[in-house]
Image 1: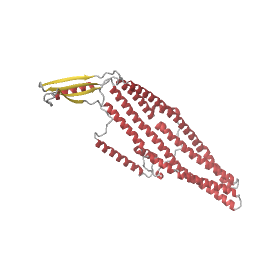
Image 2: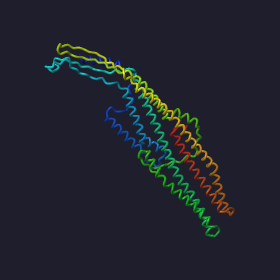
Image 3: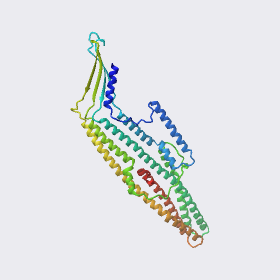
Image 4: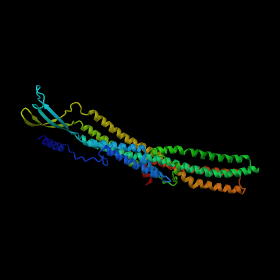
Length: 447
């Protein structure tokens, strides 16, 4: 009899609480046991480490390889994914209905004969029923928060990729700058030999030789300074790669010198409409608005449905009881939580607006830096450096023919040195600015 009553009760409750909510997808792919999840995490970790080792064995490690290692092993990325997992847990929990409770009660036990043989014994099931739509509001809010955390993973990935590109630019620049200093140093050494020969033959004053020596020393000093810098950049790279150390000498690539002009207005639209952090902020606003609906719905308290089966031992009769408990919202109508939710929603909206403004401001500065450096590269590469090379070659030939003086040759050499070093520096600045733009607009700059 009790089993039949309980079965009927659950059929009734199931019909009452069904809301048509889908089965949650948040735990898809997870094993149902802690041990199973531990094995899954261990397999994932082993696979991740194996892929990283394959990339590290390459003779030349390019930017795409570094980006992949960072995606697999960067601690900030793993933390962001854990945030997504935590949000998935909250979203899943929001979909779960409150558990029923099982009660046993014995009444009318004689004081002189303690026991259940002459009492009225009951077994009851009590099920809370959620009213007012707060469960659906909680589910919608948790789903929006989960979406926001997923979008923030994409935003964090942009930040990591941007910083990684910047460090890659620095390391490649240092390699090219060291090589350029050595090349210019060879030219300066050749000029110094000419000056020494002229001074030894008493055909020129010592000041000419000293000026040539200064140029050689300056280039040598610049080269030694550049050779010390990769260590710092290498440590930053190791930090971004989650402790994976990549030998600097294996990092390959060259800095592109031909990059397209970027339309600031199109990039602004991309920030407003497609930046993952902006989309996440908008989902947070949506979630906050759902929390207002949830707080309003919580003014209507849950009711409790009670169904009991019992037996009166004194009369040897079975009986069934049914009841309902309705809390009265006389004092607590959730006023404080409603007010809190409204202010949180207002703050979320303000935060979203502030985020857009900050991103647009950062975009404007990075875009200006990019375009300025791009103009410098274009002018230096197509006009100044070719003219300096031509002037140096003519000065060299004129000096050998005895038509111009040594100081004119030295001046042409210095002009060439400044032009080539300035070109490489501007190329670096342009690529660094592009890396900063990547954080704001992502692959939009490649389209």
